[in-house]
Each structure stands twice: as structure tokens, then as C-alpha cells.
Length: 405
Image (cartoon, rainbow, N blue to C red; front, side):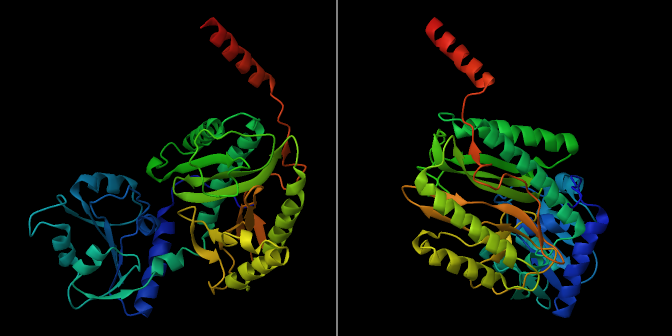
């Protein structure tokens, strides 16, 4: 397994990323590249902040240090969190009088004679404020697709955290227990672990979820509208343990059962495992991401689940827990070593439930390697839902307090 890393990036890591970007820029004849996407800014600076109405704009020249345009309010924060040389330029506030706006400061950096690359999702207000010739290119997003050894270490670390939270989730699953209770306990535990490992971790770039859907909801994978949903006997329940730890993402998910496996869930569970095995077999260097998804989907369609498919086979992780590249039909990119994917083919049957595993998987020179850990068999995922001694004591205490009241 890769060595897990919890520390902030060394300066050489950030410089390496910037150098790779600037090399691409020079090949394309760009004078500057402008980043507005907070994730791309984090990738190039280690600075993360909540997105709000005050623009943060990173302008990278073809040679030399980036220029970071920011609100004056945030300059000390930027200097504290950022890694690598930055020229900081601030504006006082937004909105501001004519001549003192962020766009006025931007025009001090860029001129009509410059050729500037911008992200395809650059906000219209920012794009219109650029006085130069612009070219839409997602250069930073492309660089993020293949991970450095440092990034792999950070993702491996987050994989350990979410695997720990997932184990707590399964261990505490009992009929009648609210999933949100376990969410609170598991996420608190791994947040504490992260802060013990790195007291300076950036909480603005940390988000964890550890939750599960009971069978009446698990056919609808993003339906968490009932915060008081409870575990039940049987299944399929679908667990989700995911997030970003100080800026790097991972996830692990499972279909599981409590006390018993309903007969109608047994064959779908085995078919999901077979689709997953095929996805692992195909997610290797040299294969097409589009072909991986197509072949997995074809397999599931042959098994009769064509109308039950809702999503692609996988997505990547990096400075987020959901980003490119994608194991998706129509996404014609070659799989390369150093890429990281979720492998999560799934299908959803209303009235029965959801069938999905997900792991965070590193593509190696010769194949792939799981970075997350969780049970993988029907036996291992059929939870003994009998109340523990602690649960029984809690129940007795609550009954006593209720009777006394």
C-alpha cells in the first residue's frame, strides 16, 4: 500500500505542479493562465476558502511566480495557508467604486496584447473583465488527472479515515437505530484523528459523511431527505463513507444486510459483484475509460438491469472527492498509471433497493490497487443486528428515565 501522508504539501510539490502548467502554457503560446475554480487554486497554492461574492483569481504567467488577486480582508489568511511564492495583489471590497474594483486591479496584470487561457467554467463576469484575447482550456484540470506520489499518499490517508468511519457505521447498525446517530459518531471520530495527525489541517477543506440508506430509500442513491431514517431487519441497505481530509478525497460504499438477506436481493447482489469484478479487470493502463463503462453496462443489461442503471462506473478523486477523469461512456480517454478512480457499478430496483460497492482505487503500472478497505462478501456484509450490551444499557436507562418522568 502507498504510504499515507497527512501533512501539507512541501514547496517542491507545488512548484512541480506550477512548472508542469507553465510548460503546457508555453507549448500553447499562452502568456497567462487564469484560475477562478477554488479547487484549481488550492491545487496550485494550497489555499482553500469558502466561495462567496468576493472574487479570488489566480493569474499564472508563462514564467515566474503566480499573481493572486484577492480581497484585502483575506490577504493574511492567504499568506498563512499558501505554499510557494505568490505575488499578492488585493482590492479593498466588493462592491466598490469605479476605479477601485477587483476588475480594475485585474487590468493592471493583463493587457489587450496578452493571450490568456481560462477555465471552461470561468464565470461570465470574470471572463468579460479580462482585457486580453482568451482561450478556453482546462489545463489545470488535465494536470490533476495523474497523481504525484505525494497526492497518492494524501488520498491513501483519506482512504484510511473513510474506511475507519465505514467500519464504525457497519459495527453500529441495528434495526431501529437512526443512521444520523452513527454519522455523528463516525465523522467526529475521524475528524479527531485527522486533527491529531495534523493540528494545522484546514477545516475549510474538510468534509466527511458516513451514512446509510435503508432498503425503502436505497433504490434512490442521493435521497437523504429523511434525516431520521432508521436501519431495519434485512436490506439491502447502502452505506456511504466519503469526504475530503484537509483537501484530498476518497470514498468507500457497500450494500449490506442486517440479520438476514431477503431472497429477492440475493441474485442482484451477486450480479453487482460480477459487474464490479469486470470493472476491476478492465480498469488498467491502456484501456479506454469509455469502453470500461460500456462493457460493464452491457454486462448489466444482459443480466436484465438495463432500466435500473442510474450512473457511470466511476469517477476520480484528488483535491475533491468527485472529479475527472471518469469511467463513463463517451469519455474517450486512456487509463494511465497514477490515476485514481472509484469503481462503483451499481443498479437500483424500486421496491427492493440499491446494489452498489465503491472503493477508491489507484491505477498502477500493471493493474490497480484498492486504497479503501471494507467487507466484500454477502456473509461479511450480513450484520449481526442484535443489540450490544452498551445498546441494552442505553435502552434500559432511557426506559427508566421515561418511567420516572
